[in-house]
Image 1 (cartoon, chains in turn brown, orange):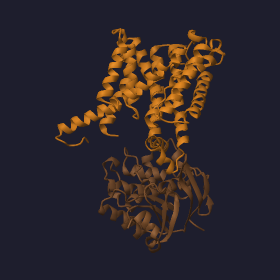
Image 2: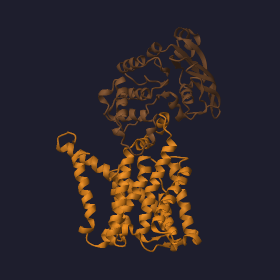
Image 3: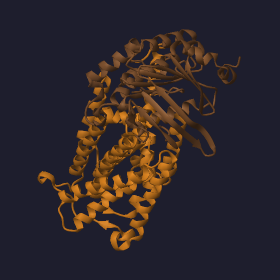
Image 4: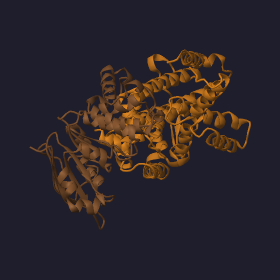
Length: 245
Length: 320
């Protein structure tokens, strides 16, 4: 059974066809890299998989379950988590509050209007553990507004990992990071256990190629090349539309 | 809670509890009652506008519905307990309907839908004379007497209002610290992210609307028992705008802000208007000054200035 199966997925915005019958098959535990030039439809594909956009046609299966019509808010409960290309956090709150919100999202306690959230020791412990995993345990109580860009990227990943996903979708996790920060995030991603399947969009080929086992090249909403690292890099179409040399 | 806050809270509680004894004259005790029930109204709107980011311009209609419901039920011959419970049910049910219609949108869309709903209800109250008695309104006769305590005196009514106010403050304080309160604030700041984290954004906002409706209904009931009269003017857009100004001027998304805002508006309307014919001008000038000098509202703005002053006094150190 595949972790993620996308079959003939189509999406148009008015007359613009952004996803033209995409097929994708990601094995459990696989590290898949999605590449493509700007406007290839990579983030749209992520938004379709997570349910933020509704496909015009096609289907999406998560570990054998058809989730095409499942509301996006239900998908995290089924084991899907994501990060965003543009960091999407809660800047007025502390780092630990951000991670606690991620944890809370999957528990029935999120409907509780009576208990004090700060006194939920189990929630706090889990949030601390998630932050320790990404190396931010020592600044857990710091307001997010007082953190660096790289730390915020790691908070995003901590929030996704805190939800114990089976499928993790990372949208350009290295974007805007310095060399040191990039190395830290790379180490962090490499340490994620194999029971988490990862699909990642990334432009930085130096770090991404090292991480990925299989690569899918999207161009104008279509998969034009797919294979292992050597196959994709060697393919002339990759050079033509993406690598440019 | 810091010791400073505890002391401030104790002083405020003591001042409110003893107010009829040191405040000279029944008129000012009545003004205090007005501040308290309008503060409950503002706290209700603050749940939506401050914590949920959903600015309603039709909340006075809900306030008026519960006030009218109280009047109708009493006129129908039922007692005060039935009237109060019935008005609460009608108010919250109306809010549920309001929410279903208005939560189809957020931002400007939400404002416009709530404005339109408010105007429809005001129009009905004004023009459906056979039911509402039009501009002549509905008169109430008598106030309830809980546990045998007559509420006909200003002092007794003040204490009743104070109890309801304290209850409302405690309810809001508990709510905003709760997981549901945190989720509501999350939907205000990053609804897309909250959805991706597994939250049902619409449902969270709907529950917030019901809570807001409950507080608004409570204040509407207190209002109608205070004035012994309800007319379409209570449901008008100006009333909705006024309570929104209470929230914004005091500090949206804070617990104390709407209470301070209610105090400011009621004092200018009821006290300053006795000395100043153009009190509306003064109120407008105060709001303009707040927006320019403390755009976050009086309470957060004062806290910011206090921190700044403290840092300067300590030579750059942060307050404890």
